[in-house]
Image (tube, rainbow, N blue to C red; front, side, top):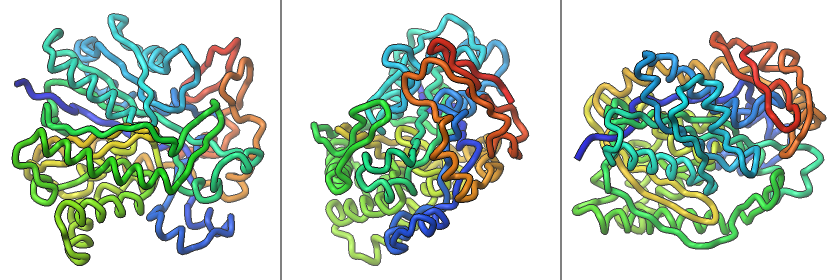
Length: 417
């Protein structure tokens, strides 16, 4: 069977962020609950940023490193999001245009809450494995933003405690038969799915849910998706098979709880072993999620990036990944990080990109939340002034950034700044 997996990976964490501890203090939240989040910072989507701009900004550095002939082998673009901007038109059409890619290309979008990124990845993996277009590449981008508006506070369950963990970001991945960063264990996967109303978006700008139910569904899925994986993969053992673990990360505390649940249920591990195992196999996966917040479909791949970039890998290492999307669908799958993957990923400059974000004061952040510039779903006409926005006008970024400048007759207009 041919090799397949991630050839390259790029992350865009936005132009601006807030310090989560400052935000919790500003809102007067219980500090004990803040500590359980295991969060440091969260990216904030500015009014001139949307899922399209996040996706393009994550993918552009990857595309720029390709030769013209290599760019022409991108034959599929899959955007994966629950932050769509149109019920019909896919984000991938805008992404394709602003990356200047060749026109012999499949463009489409996937939605299944936070599972969407994994669904898109598996579609791309099977396209490459099919061998119908040898040497082709697929560009898979998971892109999501959360926007809070002060006027909406009463409509969102426990708005105050979801605010500190809800972030914005995009992860772009080239899937090909040259998996320099992550080689998928083809066919090694397990699924678990059922209908549950844990969290949902019943309207374009409305979120609802039950936090306790969501946690229970997540825990059930991580256990049974792994059990299905073990049914398919001879000898699979949760404790021994994987050198590292990367899970969908609504916030760090939820991942730590899921790890504890699995170690107890699958391995009957004592408390001391559980804590040591989390530090050894999972702590690195939180490196970037702690700085960006929940990025929905992108979060499991942000966790993988954290492992490759910060875990000190210098020999091939197998990673077990768990992806969960509310509603719900889940998957446990795996792959191998090659010995030189961390050296290759350094070129993506993930940490430097996050360091370059503008830190919003609480006054600036509240001004954004209360701004009339917020672009709602279905906006027909509007004009924005990106150069005046904190994080854009004050940006330390050294590379061009795509921003939303206007909407005319529902058609979104962007420019590089």
